Image (cartoon, rainbow, N blue to C red):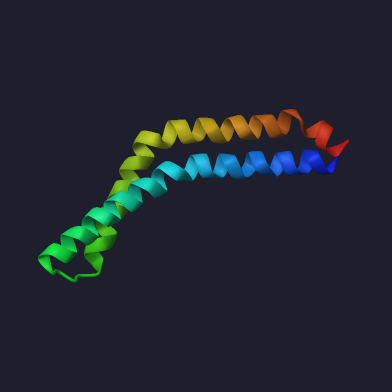
Length: 89
């Protein structure tokens, strides 16, 4: 297996990880920003107030983005397993 093939395989893996985790991280970022602005304007400094909305938002995001995320992961895994003889041999 050549160096270019290893780099290409790692690049596809990192790209898949970013594509799968990106929507959930972005959702948690937006909800966290909204909660932080709310806390700053109302001067409520409760620590648990920041975590509960983010957890709920990520769970809702998994419900909506879950099938798409699974499709992306299955496409990558299928590509890896279909070309396994090329990687090993």
